[in-house]
Image 1 (cartoon, rainbow, N blue to C red):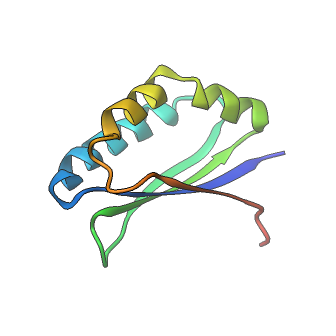
Image 2 (image 1 turned 45 degrees about the vertical axis):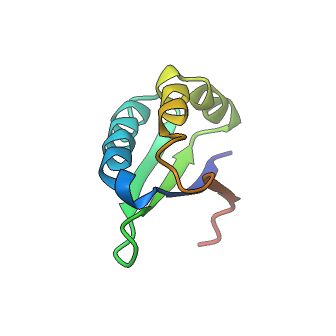
Length: 96
């Protein structure tokens, strides 16, 4: 069963460009993973410090493997000082 995630990240205003670069690198690495079906990154047009991921993973095992990847672990270590608040993760069921 596919796993759908929406992840919302808010950067500190002065860290927006640095965080964006890290996020784009994360997209490049994550989309290479076998279990990755979709990994879209968006930036709010109203508040450019807000970034949103829409992710789809083939299954729970694929998501678990993603969460263990060095590029994701490194991202979270390096982004702590750039974020205004902790990321918000929504696990959703697609309705239509």
